[in-house]
Image (cartoon, rainbow, N blue to C red; front, side, top):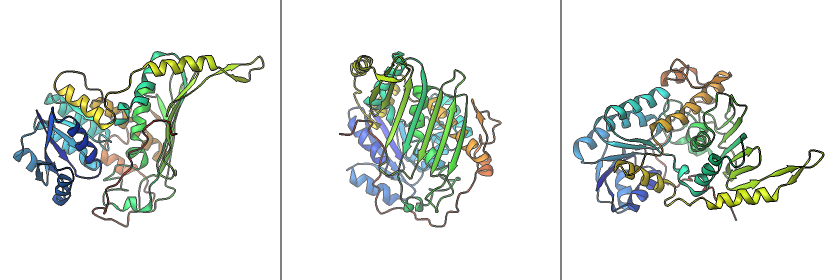
Length: 387
């Protein structure tokens, strides 16, 4: 039986608690940590947990016997928390984003390697049936070479979203919608499409004046073999529609699931290729559904990896790839220049202080609250087709 500690009692911690409870025969939550102990106490009461409450990580490590920790803290705290836990011999699952800078990501990876512990970064959207099936379909090569990939990471947040004390600052949040909302779609993109060779980005703040950071970014990514990717991240899109669309040589496929195929008429204009659409549809349907979805799926994999039963599907290296793309987007958007990948340690956005020295402040933060009265949040698309 693995003992689990959860750091941070905010809204996202509920997803971790519920997932761990799903595997009560393998693990149990024994400790909650939060800067505001009353939040941890309320969370323990909400889920009827028999746990110890701690105010910081040092107290936790000294006072509790645990094997695995979930980090549900604000982004600026991920690296220090992960490194301290790994150095203490604990396995770590950290919420996205992995850390605000690539330097911190590399420090986390080094700590995991030095202490022979597992480090996983939350990418729960990989563990959903539509995305898993789409990944398998793309890998099969059935639709031919991918020519263009489109990512629409559309979200909506009101002005008060940025009133929370750590949000809307480059120092604490590490960025805006690109870093903290589109990060899951960026992860899916690089998982399915691979890493680009260069990109160019535009950053904007259209509707949130209590925030230093962007609420929209638009990025074009290019590959040496001619493929191209397009990413839009936004906090101003009503309805929060989210999708990934891949245009192949023979057909286009997407999540939420959709397949379209065209054949050429004599004059070059398109006609539907219903026969090939049916072939792609049959291949998609033949792939198995995931056993556990979202956070449950990832935590099931983490538990199995600790037990040595299967490989870790989203390790620290995968989390770093996503942050490498985010870093390149921020470099390009702030300095208005193309950025080549891989991103070098000599890059102007590799270290956190370098980032702070180069980023644009769209506005200055003037309103700050410790906590909101409600922790109700939206976690994004299920990637199922809406009826």
